View 1 (cartoon, one colour):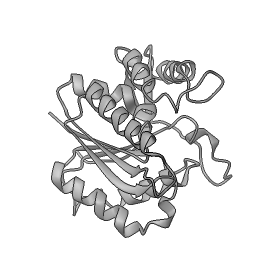
View 2: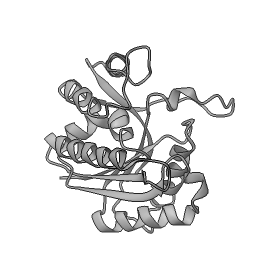
View 3: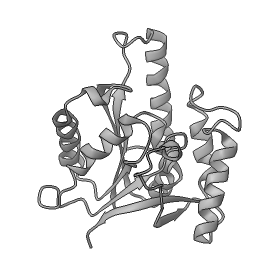
Length: 222
């Protein structure tokens, strides 16, 4: 049994990036944990109805995956670049030391959203083997509408070198994503049922499977 931790800048990133893989981990009997790095508040311009709806969706998503625990940080959404990196690292480090994950899934540092890049940097500080010896593998996931839109010429595109067969879990992943009704739209909107299925088809073909999710292996200790 492995201990799996997925770190999402925002709720829905975990499903877009590795939803099928998380479901497979759960079916394999692994322990599953989820960090959500940002939250919304009235002070940041959201209504109480929006806050309550978000909590309800997170609860339903968590139940659908069978997460053993969810850690909700209170950092402001879309503005992680205003938060001291030390604060992000300390929060993630506290969770790491509590659940002692073996496998960590993190957003890609080349994503266009600054929240994703700051979370990646904070995660990088929390996987040093001499401080967190229980972490044996770290993988970056791709997030539709973020990973593919970075225009910086010096940033290489997302090039997976690990694939996970999610053929038995794709439909459930899509059903979970539909719970995020405000984040999913009709094709050609990037976050759509059709595009989720298309992405899984392409990655599956690269891996010789019907459907797959692709990751970049960043660190592995055997």
